[in-house]
Image (cartoon, rainbow, N blue to C red; front, side, top):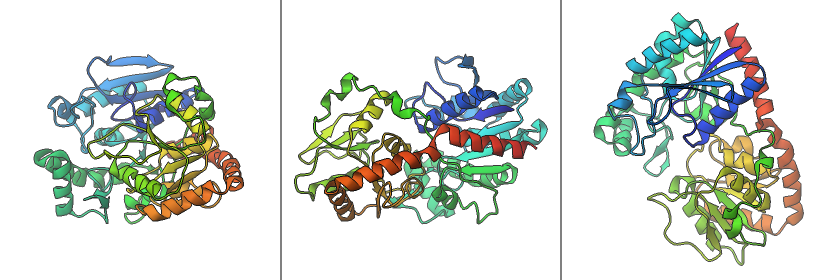
Length: 405
């Protein structure tokens, strides 16, 4: 089958969606499919390239060149409506590739919408976030989970996030283009039940099937135990958090919970700082900053517990899947996609998001029960098979076949 992936960014840009699309494209190629990727152009990257058998096209976009759809770092982001220049470039790619299926991953796929009927290709759309209804993609409103979209409320929220002019353009563009997308997408693939509900797919009668994020089958084997960055890890058992050190990821809740414990193991934080990152840390905390993926996997294999304390509805946190693939029980928030990943009482514990006292109790209880942790570790290794590339790719092949037919 001929498949065209469409995504805002692709490696060498680093991020969860970028890695997801790359692993997906390479995995489908290895299974005998003809796969290409269309992504946004970026400085110093070639317009066309062949990367491990995957043809990559980097497309110009009017909004990006105008400076309204990129971050200060230069990472390109597509607008939530069809970009005229990107649509023309996609048409040229479609002529060359003749895909049976176009698989969209974020807003760049909306530049394909005017071409769908002409192309004859089926359209599937993985929803990695809440972008169908939320201009910020996160359903995060004034430091708390959002109760749902409302036009004036979304305008104010987006203006605070993007600036007044860009926030208005993003919100209006999203509200205008989302109905067209719903009409033309053959099947949505939300990465969790929370994403399906947050984007209100059932309420609008959209066809969807939950297909979670995934990791390579042998992701645990990617660990490099000799990586020099791991010299900072403690010799004894420790708890591990991986992610940005920001409020919406719940780092402040984790630190509050940790302060309530009596003689807990060391707490290791791996991730980059943000403007809202804590500036004071309790005794026993070790901060390693950003680490490469092979070092992170090695750290997981040495950890006693994984902690994912998000206070926003994290769509489908891959860090929890990677921890389980390393045989580590997960203690996390009962929010977002974590409820799909962690089996309460079997592979870890789930507590109310933002509740430091409940998180502290769960951590203390598991710390005092080594046999329970061992049982959860074994269960995690079994459960994680449903979140591996081989399992998810097989499901996608079936979906592609149905929509293409």
